[in-house]
Amino acid sequence: MARVPLFADLNAVEIADIMRLLRAQTVESGAIIARRGEPAHSMYFIAAGEVEIDLPQRRLRLGVGHFFGEIAVLRRARRSANVSAIGRTSLLVLDAHDFRALMARQPHLADRVRTTVRDRVGGELVTSHGDLVTEEIADAEVEERGESLPSVGGASH
Image (cartoon, rainbow, N blue to C red; front, side, top):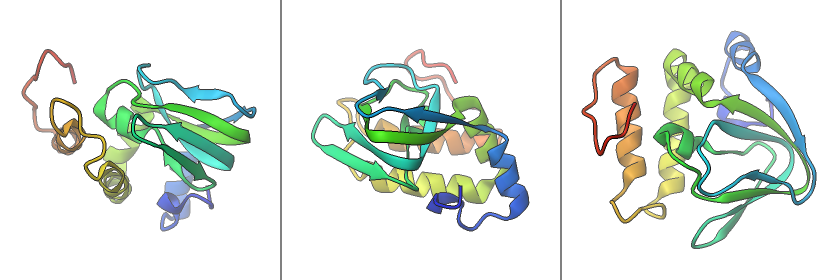
């Protein structure tokens, strides 16, 4: 947890709250962690090792302290990329439901996650339907405030 910059400013109580929600997972070199098109049920924090994210336009490598999978979890969408382990990798896995509850309980953490998502999106994950990621992040913010959202295209929230 100490290696994850997202958690750097949290106090001991907040870190303990998060630790109760995480489960450890170790994957071997070459293992697929997430597959493009699968439903997103969790996000991941890299405790040791490195992963490669195979996006349609490019490949990214993330190492210790980084996290991934949050965009699809926030969007309640399917994975947009394959993610595989580069060498033996230790992950901390956060269930989607717990992630949303955590963001509601810790607004400053939610703000940092959203900032990271916006930085990552940077216009690169725009779909043929427009920038759904930005819209869905805004929807998540409205949901956290307890306001109702209009149903769009049969999607359920």
